[in-house]
Length: 212
Image 1: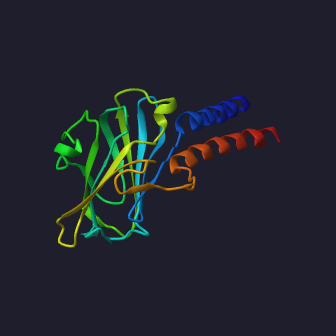
Image 2: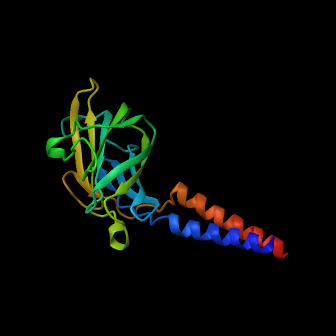
Image 3: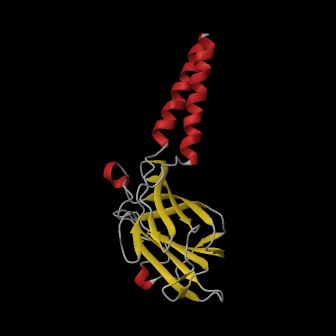
């Protein structure tokens, strides 16, 4: 029984180390809203990619625009095509869309360099939102490939009538177009990382209890 408990603890700790991922973030600011693209849990060529948008301080009326609804999101992990999107978790129904085709590099299917999705229904630009995409990339990610800096992320907005109003096109961690780098962003562990770490600590506690 003792050896079984030890094996359980070791396996859990290894799992937390292998699949916690190297959660990296390099947010940008777009008229007060903060957008981020980060790598979450995963291993090999299959990872969680987290796209987040915080509209707490967003100026909905900027540069002659009235951007009150978020209608699409679009991202790319530079250097890697996406072979498939296995699942998407987020605050609103979301489906793959090709209506950002053409200059926005969305081909309408996979494999693809950019991942483009319709947010359905549209979301008001006064909330805090986050989507987690579980994706399989064209190659194994590792080392410097896990750095979010320079990865393009985009968002499409509509006015109160639901008509196209504005397009955010920026690169994570880079002053680009109408975006600026967010200095010293807070480091918040991803939920998956915390859960796996908790599993490992729980198993370790069982070992110590048996010894006592």
